[in-house]
View (tube, rainbow, N blue to C red):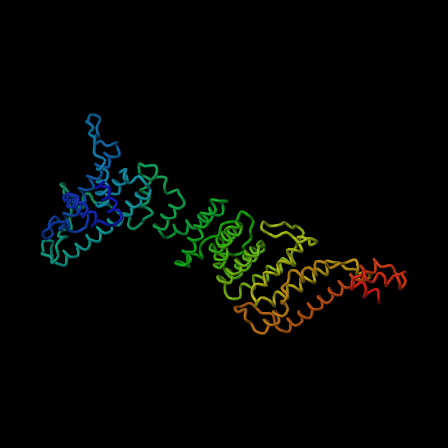
Length: 532
């Protein structure tokens, strides 16, 4: 347990705590043996037990690598130190694997670490590689610094004001310089990560194939690896479907958003994959492409509608308006309309909400309704009203939630009334054949009673803001007159229809007496018509 805890502390960069833990557990000799890795002094006296000499430091590292390799092989071979066929196997304590891992980390022995079962997970193996690369670079810096100090002092036997780093040489028994030294990869982490393929553990060798781990490695390597990974992630996000798409597409979107905020010049160079579902986005960046894909995915699930406005707001203005307008075409519940509209007003630029609503309402009124399909959550059509016309009537409600939208609501109201009149195909020679029920129901049951007055009150100032053009006052006055004409005509038509109904039920051949006797059973309207 002690060695495992110390390994975890060293791996997390808390070496001083690992040394303190070893001392507190009654094993100060372990702390003294580990201190050569650069974690300072552990003795009670001045520099007692510390590796002050540069040559001694290098020698310590070489011995640690040898011990780590031997212990690691024994732990991986089932807990024995036997190497030959005739060697008597001896069971090793499992804790030696942890001790070998500690020595491998402190001495930058990445080969020994990758053979140790303690590092059999991909994450631990990557940490061992990166730690070794850092340590090798650090060692090279110390060696160059020591050489400069020796040259500045005029010789390696000079006395330095600070302890440590006396000699630049590290010779073995044969006199070879830098014996046992481990060469790094000159800051090429891509080449360093290739060492993972030599690991005896399958999880380490194949772990990098996971797209998320592959992304981690690409960002650690940097350079062209990041661009290559982002483009591959976009292709994978396009190919995945349903539940897999939700998680990985979200990951790809946030990753590209981060890259765009930190490295905008890289974001513009990313290639856009071919979209296999036939959607046409035009000339867009990879950031726009993935945002459009993810926003469309959110719009396809009703329980995710609350997030659509946030991601749509990250798009360019034109794509934002077009995408959100297409989304709102499938929103028909009153509570959902208010929720999605309020979010658009919160996240979008000022005035963009009315531009979106204009597109939505006009598409509903003027769009092709031949292939009508009722959308889940859409209210049923009232009796006597076709589902298509009911949907067009309810579309006006989009512009009735905020007073500043009322002029546009009046514009679309008159637009819909004109459509109803044209679709009614009323015969001028026989107006009784048309009841104009859709238009009457729309004015009496759907529209707010104060629509015209509020539209006139709001047209005096451009309170919409932003770049959205407001409806000018002369136009609103003309629209008011047109609406009043529609309303008056429909009221007259209703009276005329009632007149025809009374005439059809009243015989023209009757005397005054019979008329007087029937007057008590007539309604006020019937009496008025008959008296005339």
